[in-house]
Amino acid sequence: MLDGSGKDKNQNMRPSNKSRSRNKGGNRRQNNSNNNTNVVNRVFDSAGPDSKVRGTPQQIVEKYSQLARDAQLSGDRVAAESFMQHAEHYSRMLAVAQREQADRQAEHAARQIEQAEQQRQRNEQRTQPQEQTREAPAEADLADAPQPDIQLVDTPESKPVKRKSRPRTRKPAATGEDATGSLVE
Image (tube, rainbow, N blue to C red; front, side, top):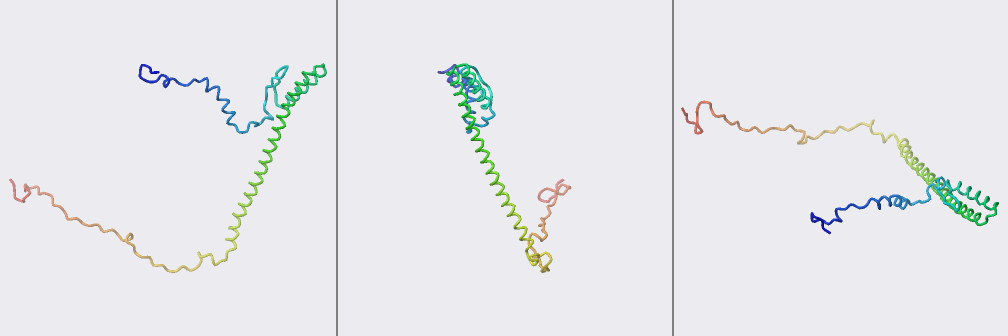
């Protein structure tokens, strides 16, 4: 559709900010390759069967377990089972997160040991050449040995530059001579 200037109206319209703002948080979560980062300490809002429970997974497990005991004591087996399922869900989440955290710590420790070993090898390689130079015989030290007389050769760069002299040009005489040399009065 063309407007008065001959341009397409759709080209002049800017994209809606609503769609961009809705996708910002989602894009950030999708780009994060490790979705369980810091789940152990993360605070969750759990909408349980009765009310909302807020806290870390460990706190939520404890709260739902307490609610399940209370429901069972009051004789409500359905509510007790529901609370137990919620507690089990968060305990599984917590177990997976703790297992991944332990794996990451083990990998980190293994990497540190490997890096320490590589650093030790590099240090050994650095000290070996120094020990070899200390053990080298005194014959290798040529600074104290007698030096031969060396005559330097004259090179064109070392000679002084002579400038070519140009013939002097004569200035025209102040007395009125013309170009042919005859007097002009």
